[in-house]
Length: 601
Image 1 (cartoon, rainbow, N blue to C red):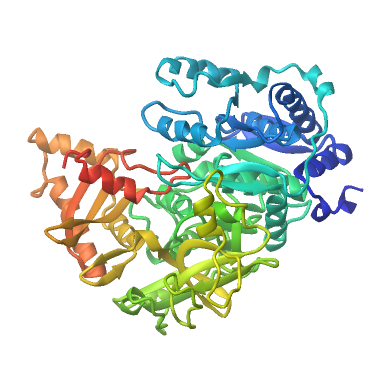
Image 2: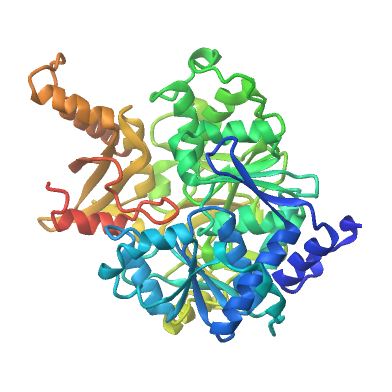
């Protein structure tokens, strides 16, 4: 009977969960791996429905409809209950992350100010930890705090169905903008259900699907793709903390194998970490041989959709991962490169399930001038001055994707790079409390009058309706009149030396004597700093210091691959570079830190 339900006709997520709780009350919807491996806690649809109503009843007693409520949870099942508790109460959820006074507190303070939130939900243990810092958290301490994990279940009976519809705001997804002015994208129930429908169709989901997700639930990919999509499709999902993944990336693959997962994924760096964990820092499998690190009983043959998004996708990583894990049953066709952003709820474009990734090799010099000149050369035998791009699929459902000149607002000609504009029911309602930015970015019109469109700020081009991403407008580095995409330089630097941390490079330009000059900030592995101490103590055996060896490798690689000279290289300890909650490098914040001399260089 459950299969007769048509989730596509739901108008709110409350309808969706109430149906699942009624028709499939005892089905375990969510399993959380506490230790990232075997220790589990679970949540059935009925339990989630009951917990959400209890939390909602408490909120309805202290909040007005449409009030903003902060969610400050470590990854886990309590977060899911609290999110749905907000929906059931008719208030607007604001996912965040428990602050650390040294780093994330300013961002949280800005979110509180922007939303005018007066209530915060968390767990008893997290609240106890936070209370120690309340004296230095003047903005946070006055909030009305309550721990949802010790709430009396009996108050569920006090819940009253809220007066909401498809246009009601469900939550605010704060984007990875500057710390001082974070922007909350207004996401409605309709936005969510439209995007969940798109994911369901393009991923080929059914009640027989099985998810494994380690992505943080306070980020759009973790929340929508990892928590809401399994509920929409009526299939179970195994969740684990991002910390458990980072500590040992192979836990992710072992969990996929153990639970016979069909859908799982993450950003490009996640796949790269797995490669390096198996092959070592070099990350290359010689001659198609057997990986040095053997993984007993690892079986990835059930993995149908290995989605890859949220950051630049590199064909080298896709090919190396396929080669490394083919012996464990991974199929290259499982890779699913896709493109999306918080402003469009989550996914915008995606490919065909079971189709291999689409690569396009182009002339790098022409690309700098925003022109696409295809090079007829296989990606594994490339000449210099070429770049291989990964296709991110086609627009989904009834959405529309255009390539537009960001200065003239005219459509770009075929073979020309421009700004990606998007329209459709997944596009959010704008930025909370920022009408001017909303008007500029969410209500853009072509010179023909067609619109409105969302201006993504991303650059790319279409080829036979396949979308290829080339970079972001605001991040382009212009040196000697040539355009350089920072992510390309960062990738080159990262691959130049085995002791450079994955996703630990920031490239940006500064004004030096009236001209733009390239700076790269690089996080080094702990092993490097141990080598430095050994060298400084006079015990090093190498003729060249570890620092000089790294600097030479970086300069040589950037010069050979980009015809650029590095003005300054800053070597940093792990965790120094400012990143967003989803792990993206904040290049403008890096530039500010460098100019301010915060890195001691």
